[in-house]
Length: 188
Image 1 (cartoon, rainbow, N blue to C red):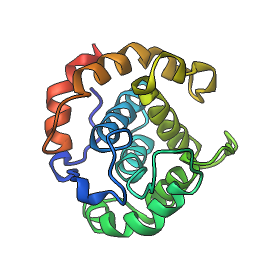
Image 2: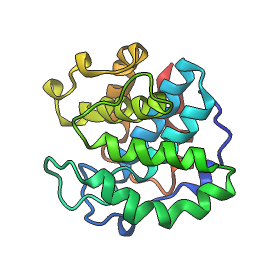
Image 3: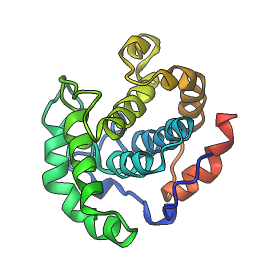
């Protein structure tokens, strides 16, 4: 699997990190979206956008207040949760440009509008949105519609997304590092 040069052991979530913890948008969902960012970013061979989308995935649903349809939880995550983890991100070498891309990706992931594919941070946003969409397999067969993918490479990850969900749906993980080490081989 694609090496993005981040210390995965530092990416650890607990139920307390979530504004309103749920199984549907909880720790395992977050970790699956993170691993989808790595897998999809590897197919694109774009380390910068992959690192950015990976960090965006880490916080993307932490500020949800409910499991229903919501266009504001991305904005809330940027306002409430990004400051909580910004020191960790900075210590791993993320720049102000990286933070701008992360903010846009997190806010936009919960909005219906799409940014232009010519936008400077389009790949980061598309990686997060498609990685999040891949984990819709957890909601049943009819909840993942490939025609809404932004990146062609996402189509090829649907079988992996299904295997990953089945493998992780009832498990508890101490950190993303544990999650990653136990499940990285499912991609092949």
